[in-house]
Amino acid sequence: SLQGVWRTHHYLNMASTYMGMQVDGAFYMKVTAILLTLMTVGEVSRSCYGWAATGWLLWSVLTSAKVGLSHDDCLAVIAVLVALRALPRLYKRTITLVATYPLALTFKYVSQILPKYTIGEDKFFDCDGASPEVADRRRAALKELDERWKAKYPKCHEFSAELKKMISDLRFTSSRCFPAFNAV
Image (cartoon, rainbow, N blue to C red; front, top):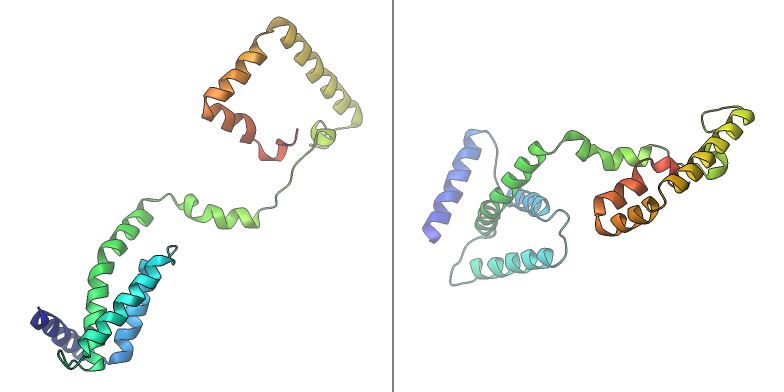
């Protein structure tokens, strides 16, 4: 329905005239480029080539002698088609963005700013600035607790190893609860 596209181009020109803007090919090219960029963020692979080929094919057909559109009219048609294709995707991305918890959006940037460190076993017992005597007492107490639990619950260690094989959440929490102490 070429008449529908012509009407859309006419209405776009009328709307832009009422807003005091002069719409020309450069405007449509910018709108098309912006919408294509927003539609393919993170997916610039085959879809980018597909959109470029589709745009070139449309341009070739619409500016051919059979259709006879001018360059500005052709850009208007392509801009309207891209806008119609982009609106549902932009709507979905907007809804997803609004529904996303703000920390989830900022964590990947903040995590690059925050310092990363690990505390080895040699600094584990005095990482809070405790004296060497206190660190030695902590080390001895933890070793004693470990030995008592191994004697009192001999099958517990084997059972927890088997559970970690079956339950992914247990593997996750046992290895990533306190990132600074993962090396211990």
